[in-house]
Image (cartoon, rainbow, N blue to C red):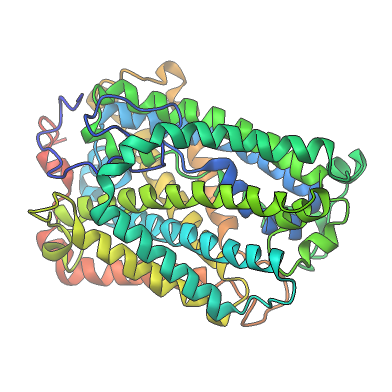
Length: 500
């Protein structure tokens, strides 16, 4: 493990995979090219509704392509920081290390809360997708089913419970099945798109590339597309995931950044292929948006493929999403454990412990399960619950990117001699790439909290903004009452950086 300038190690046994079902092996030797991502094309597929509702077919295609380009400097900046400082703490650790000395503690503390919020919301989003897609499958085979929201919430909680059980008692199985799941991930993509190419009725080229839709009533197509880009942004998230397992990866200073960058290139390329394919398979956008399942891709499969193909393909997608959820929970719990280890939470003594018998952060896993249950309850009172959860995930992670990349940019300009050596380096392009990364992450943060519709209604409101403000205020209060007395930040443990 390449952590030459870090003086502490993660006291935790690897659950096998942290960021995707293609995770690190237990011996800590290898990372697949896809390790730093979630099940990208699968989550792109299930999160298309917002982009289609606000933007239409053309809006969905163009927003994903432009978002993919916009994310490149973010991913490159994060990869370089992971090479400079390979540690499971990720953003809050980098902020602690690279921020001006007078702001290191406060910035790091705030970003630690942001990253925890982002990962917790992302974990809840995975379980939410699983539960509600199951409802879509029930409707697929029983058209009289009305998909009540309370049943969807129960399915979310059940899925989260099963995922928790896998992480506590079945974590050792993951390394033995991840190679097979990786192959299944690739094969299923072909199995989904090829039938849609040749068997489904197709929209015209004009519909896909030149026809926009303003379902949210924004009275401006451009504004509608900008609001709907949350689907594309959500599909591109997760490139920092590999960083959170860096302390268990062999030669992490070069292995982790390579996995982060190239997995992004591969996965977003597959995502573009999938989005264009599905958009061509939706000749009637309004009908797809009005589908009782709530998932336009299910409408496309139902009207383009004969039974039981939609059920079989969607079941395969659910298997991959569930596998991703298992590993995403492990990564989320690890991030919470790492921040608690540095006294970042009021209950750090409980959250930052390792189960002696299982060798895993059991309390952090239980805490994460509880957060998922709490967020799933939003679904009972709002039919835009998924939008709120992915908005919460997106807003928190994008702001953490802004702060962390901004800090390394400051140090690169003001004190370049204090930057750790990076084996995966941006070189002379560092300042430009960092500036672009800060600019786009700020842009994405601004749009991530917008509601799906212009007209204000309680069940359409994006409650992520309320939750985001609530967590931000809570972190400030906790820092003033407790954190400023006990939180030092990981920079205090880094050799040669105590007085910079």
